[in-house]
Image (cartoon, rainbow, N blue to C red; front, side):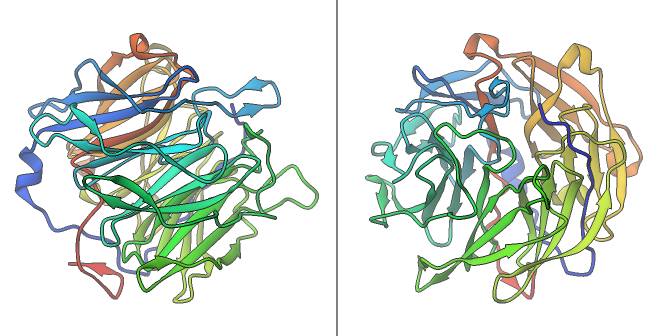
Length: 411
């Protein structure tokens, strides 16, 4: 696992995304999902969420139609973070999307709204025009999916979504990430690997993140690539930004169209300002004391916090998105539960993958009023696959907000 110093950045000078509260969403059937990234055949594990208490039930497995593949480290195959990034599984509207790193494809599923553990593949897995796809993005506005390939044949490819045909390629070749990404298949990391891909809230640009390397002389910063959306299509020329203090970014979350919270395993979370031309600059640099490896984050508007778990210590840090200060930190019995990896927040529950092949559930209710979150469940999912193979975490209904964006605010 990684052993980098840590630190968190967030800016409170720009209005943040504040969702309209829709009570119907609170009472819809719910589920949590993760990818069993198995080289012999990948699966989505769907766990039903109890509406009353937020706990999850044993998983239902659905084949992705593709193969898994793990990245490698200097000591061998990577562990539970074997894709080196975020958004291996993505839920938006009534669809689930996931990558198949071993077969270089991406899959699309429809979600049964009455029983969201019931997934139906839409069309067939589509080629990503590269090697080792490890993260997927979706724009409800554009009805478009994009993936990032992190292997020797790197690049970004996009698809239109059709409720009957599935994914239809919009490209004949991928948008190259070279010279910022120079890897093998499978990639060797975490430094110098692909991290994440996502649209901004207004869907006016597609962003990808490539890690730097603190071990080079001088240290290599992470690279942020932004492709403007022109006439409903993702352009071919990227706007390039490198932030000197951000070295090992694993991705991030937009707080508005103008502010991106970016997690960094070398210090914590960075708050970056996004200009009208999609250039990124650092606004705030808040160091999380004694962190070892903060590699994931989720923005939870309900709790006015960006949550960032440290997979080296088991400590979760909640960051105030307006001031960049640390609101709180909370932990649990790591020896009993396991270290935290990718996670998601739904209503008042936080769901995280552990290194012990389980899904644990934190109760966040009352945490804004000083109540310390506690683990209320730790569900063993080892029968669904190896602990090293589980990647990604998403929930249904998703937090992908369909809202009107104006001047950085959502109404």
